[in-house]
Image (cartoon, rainbow, N blue to C red; front, top):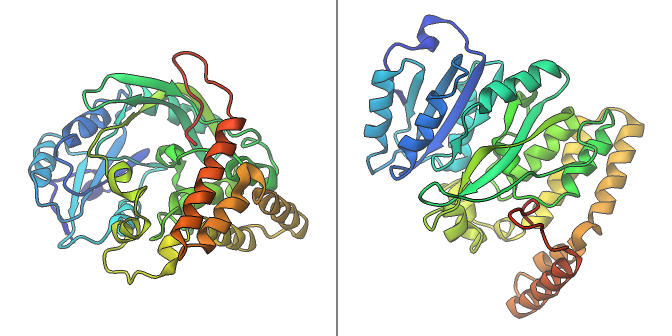
Length: 338
């Protein structure tokens, strides 16, 4: 691992208010747009930590150009591809700010994102995470739709109520890219090297404290044909596991998404909730999870991994149940991802 940036805040010893970690591997197509959207924020007291996972395209050149012109940029280049999970965690390990967020190389921040999110966390010192609305954009940057994931109860004092708010809400973990209180992430699971680790981290943050939610669509989430999580990861869980950690031996856990997430939730409760009463309430929420959104079908599907025909039949049943429960969205808007 080599740090390649010129003199920066890190070398001067001055800690910024916000640290942004941008893990990247071969992201040349959209990387410059993502970096510019961060550095052009009107909130200036930030550091941008780019962890380049041994890219083979022009990623390193693009990063170096930004580092030369802005001392807030720090570049960490890994000598080999460590996998997405380790690269995400490296971003956090190098961060020093009071607040921290991960940024994807193909997403952008709308103007004013940091000013509004920092103000929200400053106003609510007990909050561990600030989430915002999402504007889904296409390859050219045109807005396709706007929505906000809502987690009823996420701001309450009860850990069980907050935990339930996250695990019972359908979403695709866009809020993983929210603005965290860095102290709340210390000692957490961060980006684990398994499928669904972002979902588990959000549940852990719910156990650690309330969230504040801004409905403004300040997170520009790019949907495009080369997006790896769409093209490969959602279709092949074994490839998803290799993306997380290319040096990891593949086992059955790579194919047991819901089962692994369930047991991780269970471990979180044991680890994070000291009160016996609060822990019992969290266990009750986890028991209810089996029947929220018909997760028992997902768990059954995991157990039938050696019977693809039966898995496909259960997937079709689950799809029909989901469609029957969903109300049509209002024109120009959609609810959170399923």
